[in-house]
Every structure is written in structure tokens, then in C-alpha cells.
Length: 276
Image 1 (cartoon, one colour):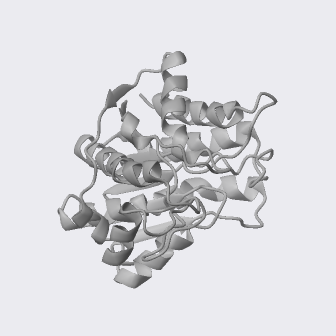
Image 2 (tube, rainbow, N blue to C red):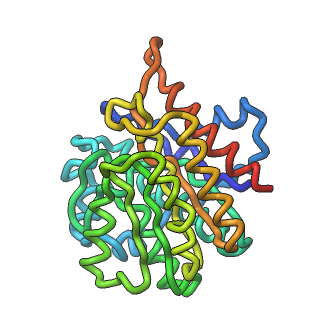
């Protein structure tokens, strides 16, 4: 399976969130596990593509480090990585559409970025830049976004409403909802099926809904594996291409590493590869 990754996606954010440094760690874990992945280097998105989902002044100020990024600092490493993380998401979506299958962008930090503001460890909304780039390039007539991060994708909704594109971008954010796992799983297959009129589904396979995550807390490791299995199986059944990413995850082990988060992302990759 294609994984769109380059070292230019990686940054040291000097933050509680490991998201900016996670792409390389996830890919290294997949390689160590012997997963059948084919790594491709994505092109960065252009500044004009960033304009499709963000205010121009906001884009310029972020890239020139004049204002704080989603991590609350003006780190140049983070600014330099942003066109590449979004470029990976776009490349994965393009590949999924062209093949009718699945592709991965091992990126995070998208869904809290609004039209003109960064926050919540998110700076540019790679989901919406991808969706609008696909629509503008006529690679898709309708794009779906299934956000299974622990937190509500407020930035995604903000941009959809700002652009008035709810008829061509369908967004469902599971978010911090008071929902029992059994009820969630009962409805998950039908939720994926509701995106059947979309040309591609952008799937945020977040690790932070894990019951032990400091910012999460409602699904076990096995339940997260079931979540991913249901999403991929249902997509196969209805012929829906998927481009998926890592989204959030904040656990650490006793050694201070993010191994618990990487284990969850490993399971997502296993579920995806089991569809072949």
C-alpha cells in the first residue's frame, strides 16, 4: 500500500503534542513490523493551494513565522514542514481516487485549524486544503471527511461554512461525544455507507480516543482496531476509496516514548493491509 512520506514532513515542535515528529516514527514502526508498504515522496502543496482553504494573510504570516502556529510558537521547523504534511494528504487522496483503493498520509495536526486561525496543535487544515484541491482540479465532485479523532473538528466545519461548500464536502466528526462503544459500533458501518456518493473519504484514524490517552478516554485498543476494521471493510463493500492519516495521540510509556500511540497506528495499518 502506498504511504506518502518524506523527512520534510517532520519537525520538532517543542510541544506536549508529538504530532509534528510522529510521521517518521510511525513509518519506522511499520517498516520494523515488515508491513507491505510502498513509500512515495509527496510534493508539497503550493501556496495557492493553501489559499483554497485559508485566509491569504494567515498563510503568509504562518509561513514567515510572524504569528504562532498551532503549537503556540513560531518554530521555523514547523512552518517549513506544513506544505509537506498537507502535500502528503493530498497525494494520498489523489492516489486513492486513481486506484479506487486505500492510501496513507502519516500526518497529523489538521482539524482544529480554521479559515484564519491556528490552534489545538493544528496550523493548516490539510483535510480542507485536500478537499478543495481535489474539487478545483476536478478529481472529485464530492469529498467525504470522517473524523475519528477524539476531538471535534471545529476548524473543518469553520472552513466548510466560510466557503459554503457543504453540498460538496461532507464532514462527520465523532468528537467528544457521550456515546457508548456498542452504540458507536452499531452505527459505524451505516455512517461509512452514508459517504457512498463521495469520490473519496478522508479518514482521520486518531489514536487519542484510547481509554488511557490523557486527552481521550473511551475506546480500548481492541475497540480501536475494530473501528478501523469496520471503516475499511465497509469502504471495500461499497467501493469507496480512502485516504487516511494519523490524527491525535498523546500517550507515553514509562520510558517517555510514544510507543502506545505507535501501537495503535500499527493496528490501523494492519487493518488496512488485511483488506488486500
